[in-house]
Length: 135
Image (cartoon, rainbow, N blue to C red; front, side, top):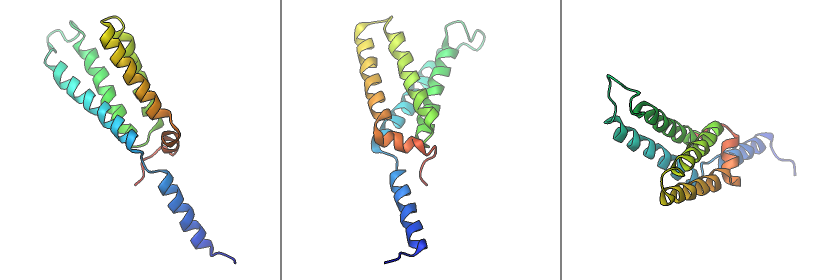
């Protein structure tokens, strides 16, 4: 039986759309990252002294928090570079927390492991391979 070319194209399109759906785990990590960035940005914004903005590193903390927001939003949009930004962001926090306390280091290390697992599993790789969110 010969199939109609239009039917084959429609089936291929439906399959691609199914494979490009965002996994729930990516949505959760993306929202967590963006929310952590937003809450941290608002919290640390109160420490900013506009007369001496670089005196207590509040500007740099704000930049780090903005990177979290950008990473979370663009992971929702399926950008592969945002996945790497999220890994580097949490990795940076693991390193910094290593200089503070062991419980903080352990929590950030656990979060790093969760991020790595979620962001580099096969469904995530397929989602990020397209470079855009379904839509």
